[in-house]
Length: 168
Image 1 (cartoon, rainbow, N blue to C red):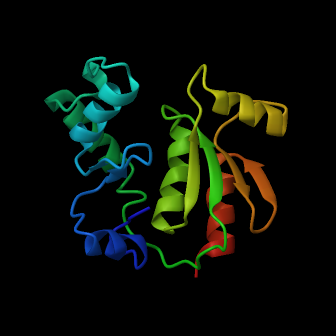
Image 2: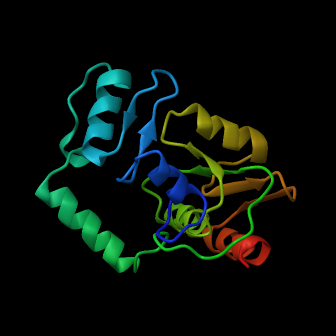
């Protein structure tokens, strides 16, 4: 997470010469990319069997406008740092990209600059099975905090928990 004003990861990234976010490092190839369109194209080429980037995933005026409006509606949630103490171990979040509830949990993790492992759970993903095996149901977002032993659902409860436990 690299919110504006964050004292941990953003300065580290800038120190490595990364000036754009998101920034991706593929641990399988060592490839580093820093522009959204380049990252998406790389992922489809490398892991999507060379498939063309679908229109709804591409950089185009419709997507740019709709994403800007969505960000505006969320009042920039997740983009500005809120002082927080760092956990000893990363938290784990299972989320489903189209879920508006998952957005709340992801934004909170980001604005508190909390290190976390994000498991995306689209239909057909093994990560969906992981959630079911861990909880007996499929519901996202789902958070596990190895630092406290807390395991929970519900976006607003997750956001409240993160603020109560980690915000300074």
